Length: 476
Image 1 (cartoon, rainbow, N blue to C red):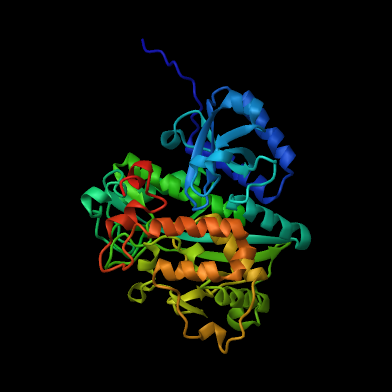
Image 2: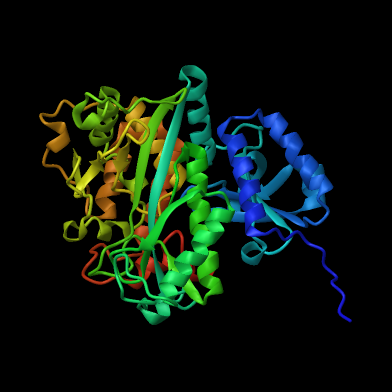
């Protein structure tokens, strides 16, 4: 007779969806943090089948990090979680390495046991400096503070939804093994909307979508994309910090599911030359008390003047913030006009080569779509730069600004020069964080050929911030 030794929490997908949607509603209604904290701690204390709490945070480049804390330990010590920041690129120097993790109890997620293991829950953390203040290089903290200040001062809610494209390649760790193989292998070559029963890409999309539903994503549609082995799984909009968290979870879920299938989910912007790359179209709007401030039934394209002013500021600073939206060497392969690349600094309702599009919409869905965003960008950096620039940036005195013949840079070095020379970025990030970010980008770029050429080089994959590890970095 077999005896079950481990009694760990394993919820059905329906139970997970109900619990995650309830937690999501608390967050959207801005339930007082102390009430949510009290509720979560009581749950963790009472639920004996939970063994660990996975705390997630992101580094300056946007790479997701995860720490598992024993459940009993975190219940007792949640307000004193220290970690070594010197091991995180873009964080502290070795001589001043101690940082703390605060828990954002509103960003709490019940995790499917077949994907993340039984007896685990997930929660996002906030990086705290030695003196107890928010850590300057934790962009999630900066975004949250900015969004909260606008809500407190103006009752504005910043909303976002992202369309995140990716590739499914054969084999586990296809990116990390690229320096040996020199190629990526498609799992199918069907293309846009293509689907056959048992097709590995369709099985992957279906499996990933099920996990997203269970985690409260509120899915909208999913399908194979234009390029071979490419996919897109769309879900509903959310408040800006929650939306950025969902980007990190989306990519994490895709990678977990792909690995279980023996494949790799890849979010490099252009892993294969000659086919469409991966984008992350970022749809944004601002509302107050349920009213969409971007909607005007009598406005041009039914967008309000406030919405058009928002667009004008982003176009003005488009080159300044390009590095924040396209932060890898590989990203500049995607800004290629032959594949519907949004590399033109203009706005349009129909031209998909424009950096910004104004989609057909109604009062609820009126929004601005920033198309020149790569899926490997730090999602918190993307949201902060888009919203803060659109709200607080300058407006250039340029004739016909929205249709001027201007282009985004086609290589990372020009983007770095624009970024470093832009006074706006000092206001956006602060001098120290601006310099750190630029240095990280330059360190990776200097390991890659300056000319992109006509095929993807090993270094642009090997030293990509979402791919490298200590072993690969030290192979230079």
